[in-house]
Length: 292
Image (tube, rainbow, N blue to C red):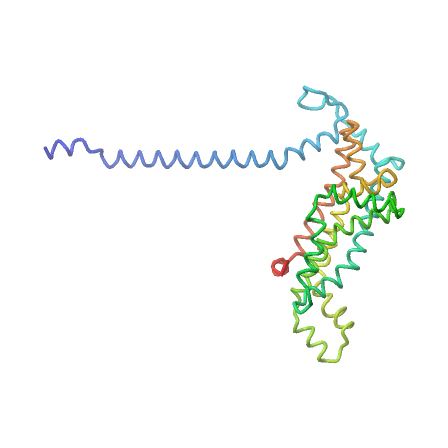
């Protein structure tokens, strides 16, 4: 009986081969599952961008063709024509974005420095106050702002659009500036005061240089937010003020997908470049101070 049972047990070499086979199978399945995941992720991430790039050089593209039947740079010439609407809208967008950054800096730098001190009365209340514009639907807020601006004559003006963009951008600039000033070394500030330097000199020569990377990052956030802002500009500025997002929307509604795609690409390029700069200026220790 013992000899018979021994005959039915699989040999060690057979078991080892089976184990190697299943290990190889699992490894191969894991490899292919990772490939499928990466492919799906790439399609989700780069699929829309690829479609956007194709539209920028497509002169004729009709359904059900998978690719354009005629390629060319005709619409690029139209976009960069000195007399095109895109050139004027681009300059208007940049001008409004720069003014918005200046307005936000004038408020966020002193506010960020004051709010970085935990001894400030009602500190949490003031910080939450800058989050209120984000707590309500933008459409409802901008509709009411447009009605108020119409009564005071700010509708259809650069000033009105800059005010709307600034209110929206103050959330980014104030909170980031608070984190930037909170990450500075207080001992250097105390040493400067102990050596006889005044508060203004200490702020501009000791504190501000330390917080400069965070302030630059906040400026970039505000600039990009203003450059891409559509809803506020539409309700407050249109039709007298035309920015790139408004032009993109108009071109899309008219079915001019080439102009819309080129306009979207123009808006995409500074976003990518500035995000690389933000990655350089935003330090981990400063990010840890946001909200504290």
